[in-house]
Image (cartoon, rainbow, N blue to C red; front, side, top):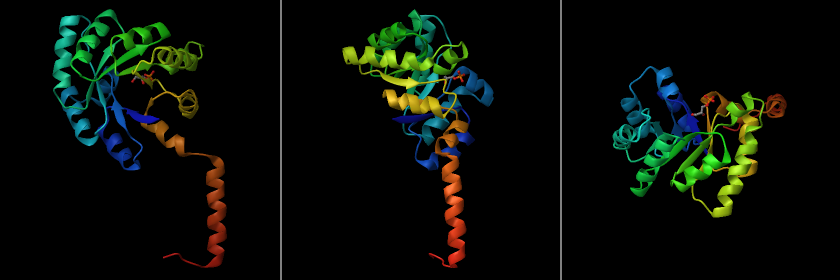
Amino acid sequence: MKIFLDTADLAEIEQLLPTGMIDGVTTNPSLIAKSGADIKKTIAAICEMVSGPVSAEVTATDVETMRKEADVLAAIAPNVTVKLPLTQAGLTVCKQLSAQDVMTNVTLCFSPVQALMAAKAGASFISPFVGRLDDLGQDGMNLIRDIYDVYANYAFETEILVASIRGPQHVTDAALIGADVVTIPPKILAQLYKHPLTDKGLADFLADWDKTGQSIL
Ligand code: G3P
């Protein structure tokens, strides 16, 4: 399973790249706003740091303007993935871009039939938002299960990119289902390594090691 970082913060990306766990980056208009930086410069900088897909989202809502924005974003670097909303206009532009082999990420997906439409539009990635469904009292992971089954039924190549991840359990569940990608906020990446028994076991080992007076180096 691939792991993308869900951030537009260059310092966070730089800090976590040496882990070797980062396969790509996703951004959205809210994350760009939070970074306070220029979208084109930010996406260019991320694409220099990360060789995998880097999602950059359009903000227009009509086909013509959205397509112009998509072309500007796609021209920034070969690994830009144009992020489009799951609307009729977004899927129209998705179909155009996929015909030209431009990578696309269709976002704000909340139902299996929306995911079906995105796959028919040739999306490279579909981004279902599990956390926001959980927030409404639903089980967001049921959406991932349903999309997985729908895509398997028709052998769609669109990759399931689980978004709006709130914690390690979402990552575990996505992996058990077989989702292709999770995009996670940087602070959650650190949580994926953690287990209290690992910390306790290491402390015990080191305490015993100290008693030996030995040194490996
Ligand atoms: O990038 C899209 C998605 O991951 C947003 O997550 O936490 O704003 O629901 P959140």
